[in-house]
Amino acid sequence: MHIAIYGVGRSGTKAVQLYLAHQLAEKYGSTWINYEPYFWVDRKTFDLNYEGYFHHATAPHFTHTASDFSSRHIRFLHKLLRHDPPLVTKFIRGNGRIDAINEVLHPDLTIVVFRDLYEVLISLLKNNWDFWSIGFEYPISWDDFVEEVRRKELLDRFDWVMDRIHDRLDQNAFYWFTMNLAALRSRERKIRFLPYERIADTERIATEYIQPSSCPSIKEPRFSGDYIHTDYPLRSITRERRKISLINNLFYKSQLINRFGILLPYRQMGSRAEVNHNFQVIENLRLPQTDVQIGSKELFDYFNEEIKAQLQPHLVKPQSITC
Image (cartoon, rainbow, N blue to C red):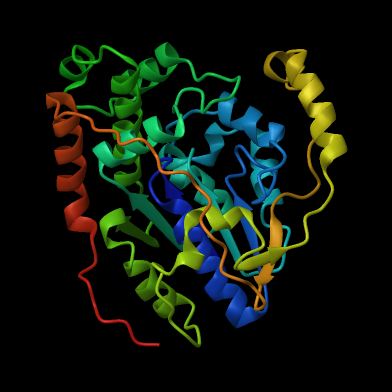
């Protein structure tokens, strides 16, 4: 069993991955987690994945075929499969590449998580995120991204939209819109679309595909997405990759990765996880966040309405959950 999860950042994909990985680990004893391999080496998020980072930066953002990827990029994706199943792989930088990535990975099920644009933008502001840099040194080129969107004719009202983009928040909204639009145009057959407001449907998906012995609620505190990085409720033995990461960081700082693609590839990415039956409930030590509000905006309303309208025909009707 291999489940692939896609979604724009801040959309709830961490909670979905944690829940499904937990259910798989409970049934099979363990599961392999590939946590955003375009950015992190494993789910503990200690080491940046410079190899995945390079392929993300140099590949098309929107493509339906793996032939648009370099041979190195395809080998990189194949490495995600070098583990005994079950596997759960998550991308938040792959919505426009679902078909191309799945052509290599061949997952048994693909889930795409959608979340309301205003909620995503508020989460970005609260967490100091930005789809163009993610608080990291590498910025996505806005001009190159817009040109790719224009060239591939993703938008019906391209000029109308571009005339209404004036600041960084508008640019982030544009990224959200184009990525979700691309996901809705995926040709993948084994795909389930999951709106964040229906995240409890994850339980039904787990029952249908995993057939676990129990059906805990995804809304339990232990399935908070933040816990994907800890040994609660899943436990992992993390391999030491610090030497390779330090060398790749040096290559990155010297511009050798960006300019020439010089890096040390990882032999293995991700981590195996098993259920931690001896966990203790961890107190949420987060400080209360500042209240952030975003006023209604014509551009944002248009983006939201378009995605919701195109998403509706793809949704599975809610059903009762039975283990």
